[in-house]
Image (tube, rainbow, N blue to C red; front, side):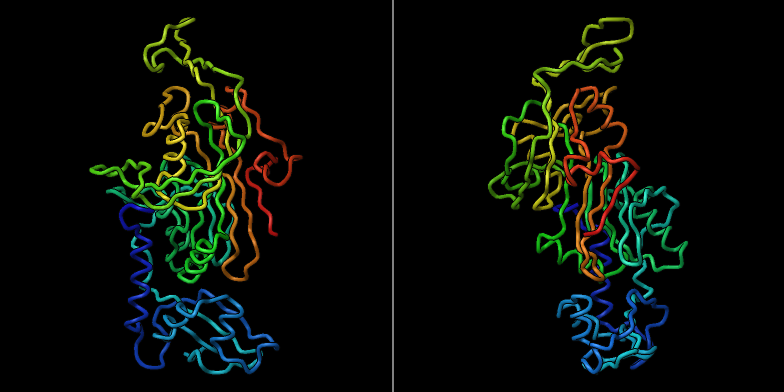
Length: 386
């Protein structure tokens, strides 16, 4: 997670850089042993006679820094032979970029169930259920999305060098994008830095948020002496969240719950049933991240006095009603790393959150309201390309 310990993908990216510096090959002018191409294309007529580096910058939007790394090892082939980035190419030449086989992830491959929303040779977008980690962390090395992705790629004969570009907390559901190779990760990281990778969430917060929309600009840091909790503090990292109200309860709300699960031992109106009061009501929100700090939405809403319902760390747990925080990453937009076309991928509210929303009588706009609300359309997932 951002702001925490180094993720396995960060270490993988560092090893990629070091391998390029060392030159992971059998000898001068020889292809990398065991490497697999991650990009392959035929030079079009309009690029005939151009320098290879120019073609790569123009076609794939590769930065000069990334190209400098590539030229330190024989990771670029033209018609099957190692090529220098400064040499000219001809129309019809086949250009391939290689990923060294030793860059395979150290994550243990496991047949973890994956809900695939979009996949090609460059990116993999998954719909993460609540309760699952994105990647191994803090002693938990099994059962994560990263374990499942490694297994999936190996089963398809691909180098398991994928790493997450976006991350979600264990108990947040929704869309996560994995880059399948270092260039895809580089390109998506650049897009994120330019503000072109956009993440939208749906949340249910405690209390009535009075403003219809707004911006939370409040720096976040780790709570001193604690591993997990974050807080708003002047010396924290910049953190910006935009929000928009979708619906509000009409005042206080009450939910029935089995008596043994009711917090505080509320009196039961009937056998085995009690009532959980939400005296401040609740608000359904759409939130967009401009930065990506650990627990950012959870900390920002708690800072406003409207913590996420069900959040055991910053708000109020709801045992027997909702077993996690009411937060779902429903929409993800980014330029494709290979050709720049814009992808917008959507995940509807999962059953537990949708049922919770209905119990609070909170309304989601219909598809007729415009593309912002594609998560209400029929089907498990929706996606479109601009």
